[in-house]
Image 1 (tube, one colour):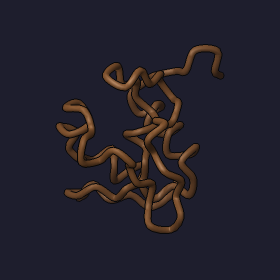
Image 2 (image 1 turned 120 degrees about the vertical axis):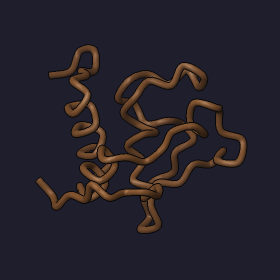
Image 3 (image 1 turned 60 degrees about the horizontal axis):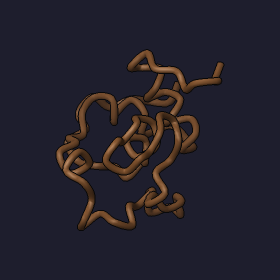
Length: 94
């Protein structure tokens, strides 16, 4: 596991919250990156509709989970850890 920080108070643009949970307002299934999520180019995974994002995305607040997943090296690893923390499994997954 990567080093953790439980003191996360701002978004790290790790993309996990845009990839791991299902987001009904966007028709996004569990474990699938949002179509509005850009690729990580060293500046983080940035949302293309950030200014107009749905309320569920707007209300999400970084917490200890972000501190746990953000240091992981890939979006895939961050998504897997996010799902593991919440005990969620992608249908048809391991």
